[in-house]
Amino acid sequence: MENEQILKTQGLPQGFVWGAVKAGIKVSGNADVAVAVAAKGANGAAMFTKNQVVAAPVTVGRRHMASTGGRVSVVLVNAGNANCATGQPGVDACVQTCVAAAERFHCIFDEVFPSSTGIIGVPFPAEKVLAVLPELEQVMGATPEHADSFAQAIMTTDTKMKVARASVDVDGVEVRIFGVAKGAGMIHPQLGGPVGPAHATMLVYLFSDIAAESEQLRGLLEPAVERSFNSISIDGDTSTNDTVLLLASGASGVKLDARTQEPFANALKLVCGSLAYQIVDDGEGVGHVVTLHITGARTEAEAKQIAKAIAHSPLCKTAWSSADPNWGRLLAAAGYSGVAFDPALVNITIGAQPVFELGVRSAAFQKEAAHAEMQARDYTITIDLGLGEAECRFLTCDLTEEYVRINADYSS
Image 1 (spheres, rainbow, N blue to C red):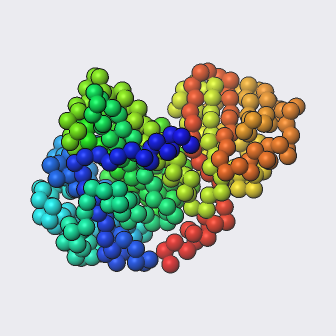
Image 2 (tube, one colour; image 1 turned 135 degrees about the vertical axis):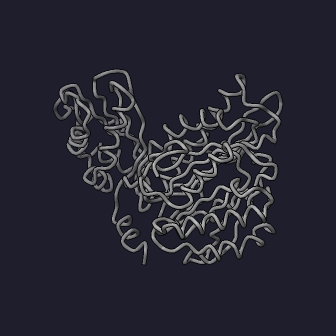
Image 3 (cartoon, helix red, strand yellow; image 1 turned 30 degrees about the horizontal axis):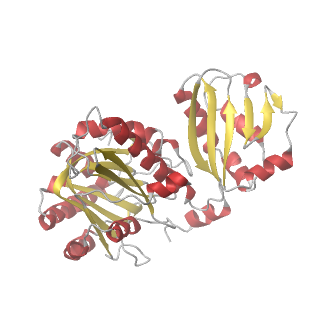
């Protein structure tokens, strides 16, 4: 797609360096500790999982964002161990790595933002992270290769790194956004604000060189997340570690104000949308990426409620894996979603093929034609409820034998 090409060819934001090394946390032996450093600091906004069970870095990250007012100088990420369900020792180990990173990269310890991804319930090997901090300092840089090394090191069951870039021209000055994500399973993000109740995961880091306060960034991040990361699901499982972090170094010299807010917000939404799509497209065992376009709803929230019921239905997801146009499963899932509607008003199309119209199978329904639509890698199912003007788009996928195989063996 043209937009995808644009997203991947822009320059990197100023004010950041990236790097990654092998610490021996991943069983594969691949790079597993990554760092992003803003030498002059950055203002940030974060959203975390709403799961009641949260990993130690989420607890510590929330605390740090609150104590600094959103000021971040170092992002420290490890893959291969989620540091979740590890009790107080896990929190202490996370703090220990933050203190050491702060000393190494010359900032106060609560300006270090930690993240972890990997297996839940395994004691966190802080000593392995501490041992590679000197090496990390030596390999950091501001080139695309350095940024890509960060993106690759945070992967777990991902098969490819996920990056997106965009820029905004302001009076001849280029303001840049660079986004990095990981996630292929345990993906149904339900992200909320930085303060809330206390394995594979979704992690997203958004770097920009615009000059903005943390409160301004929060105002832009929440709507961007709601229609991207909060509108996707691979398997319906919400991780204990899900995190989205937006940072602004200010190095471009361009301020986020009334004139620049809209174009910057649009660029941010573009990057978030691209990363969200890449996560689903690289989902564990995914054969088909399915966009659920729910229209004619009373509210956007009700449209999303129906989309989630369908996206999380094993019957719907397995039908998609074999390109079976079983529209009855779609209608049934919508029916138990908790949203009130009249089936006699509903229309369903798969791709361009009408399959259900106003309470009965469409007279134009052609099973083979609908089957052919569903054999595409990427297609849309549209459900019009006939109730109002609200709508949503929700990105999901099929459920395959490969997904079962990956997750049956994940901890072994």
